[in-house]
Image 1 (cartoon, rainbow, N blue to C red):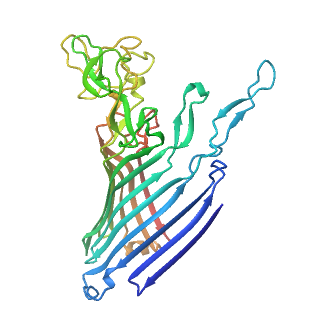
Image 2 (image 1 turned 135 degrees about the horizontal axis):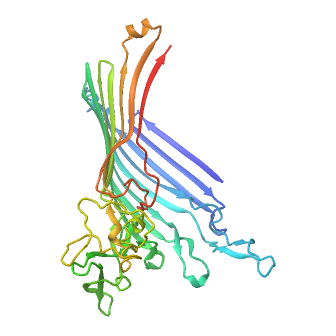
Length: 433
């Protein structure tokens, strides 16, 4: 259930302001906290309409923008706040029930507070530029939190703390050549820094192979740290941290015992930047358009390698071909990336660790299209208003160091046994009668 109001105002098509307020209620949340109030305010200044710029013919638009607002997130699924029972559990030939969800009557909205400052510029009828600086703080994060086994549950949805995202986004469109030959470019890039500001109780939360901790990235990988292969024995090596009485790390040592190694922060699934580049070239009815997208600086966990790069751990699985710069240990003295293969596994070498954490950066030719508009005289001779032929392709090339089938993964950063992205090529004819 929602109520919404908004007020907008502009003065002389130069100064603009907007304010809004809404109140939302959702039965997904606990009975104590179902409603939330959210508001926003924004303003902009069309500087190109000012007298000191209005006569500048080269300047088509120059606008400054600023905004601040709050929104609510209720994406937790239905009944997450309810204590739920399953009555399909017979016991001793009698009807039985067991609890399947740990209720949380205080569960409430996750609130995003976002501030944004931006500028829009259009100049010379050739350059269209937008730059945005933003900060977004999410409070009362909705997160699945692991529970002690003694409770009888594995996890519970809770509001656990605050996370801040801040960064810059740039969008640039240019007309590089214009006339008989036309070339246009669209480019965008975004940089984002993520940090956990506060957790309920201040204690870190282990979420699978990631750790949520104050002062760290929300998607920080938390694994035993892989240290390579013992050149004399071919056994796997991990790093073990040595701590003092106060828990401070004072030294490290290598161990071949997986259980002796401790989990550490070893990377992040958050990219340093992402973006895309589109180019369009037109000449005498021929048009070539290409679009590249890219991601840089994220660590991807290639969990499928636990199965098909397991050093003999799963003999019934096909094994991946080693990359060019990988090598298998064979004899003492070998400086190898992969341990000695042993039937049944080599000292848990294929257990979760940073061994399977890979650079997820990539550059992909996402799409390309080449078309030709048949001259009007030719089309008219065939009783057509217009005609064109074209060829297009999707996912044609990918440049990456990732060893799996596809480096494009979700925000969580896990690359499992997903079906690989398909490469598609299409040829066609378009006729307009």
